[in-house]
Length: 454
Image (tube, rainbow, N blue to C red):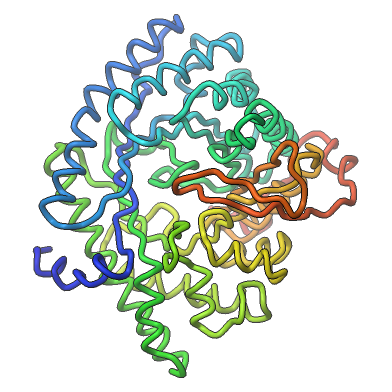
């Protein structure tokens, strides 16, 4: 059983080391909202979200105040909309109508993001899937709170290269459609491989069809806490280092477990999972990059970076699974660029490149995240980057993703300001050699041999 004394033990972490519950995300199934008409579908969607999630924001604020735990975001994830809209959407514009409804509903509830404007196309696209994907640029341009994700592959099915090609074009079109805001739409669009059904973090969150009608997932984050304890362990051997990280992750997860159980009880919705992800913010001291430097690297990107990140990720997960029986989502360490001041500094110092970040994604959570690239980058190049990252996930049986932002009108050396948790980013160079002939091939890359485990 959890009790308040366990939270009091972490009081210093909360007050001085940036420990927070990054998000309470309520997952809501919209499968029963499908209707033959777009208008009727929108009405059902709005009514159900308001009914199920009406108390989410207030509950999060009450728990935060009563327990003294910062809860930064309250969010909603929904059934992938390509499934819900399949019976009524005949044009991309029909899907944009649903997106507007979702955005207005999220605004009424006061949540900061709603995820699930999504399609799962790891083996092929239905007409509904393709319509939704083609609607994404407009949908993200005319909404504020909607996040979109597309899963283009899995270890079991391989990679749908037709979808990979289309997503490169979609990312570029989204950048163009939101160029008046430094292509901000791309910051709310992620392309995944092996997407989990229970991820509470945006932009990749959606409510999987294997989930209950409604659930509560909680994402906890504490890179500042881990950095602080490692500062006390300078010069220690690897065994001591790993034990320290593991014990710290245990304590952080227990805080999340308490919040999740309390939110579940008050909302009358089952508890899903705790996602223990070291998710940084632009705040100084709240950085995964700073943890890597504390481990012994001059800058992230230096030789040894991938090994250090692998160790960190593993110990975080080991500590988390001892603290909760329901650790899930994307638990591990995130390495976004724009949201981590230490990563930004490493890029500006010339220590960190997209190629090194790609190598790091083999051992950490998610993938190439919040990376600004030149606005004139071809769509085929973006598709190639997506294919590379998805292949890492497919072969290594892990979730990988690409959230990359071709900033229209910006080039290498420029800086982009996104604001808030999205931070700011230097525009990074990409490999300029062409991959169009590869990306233009139709079909899919088969699943790897180790996918046959039946």
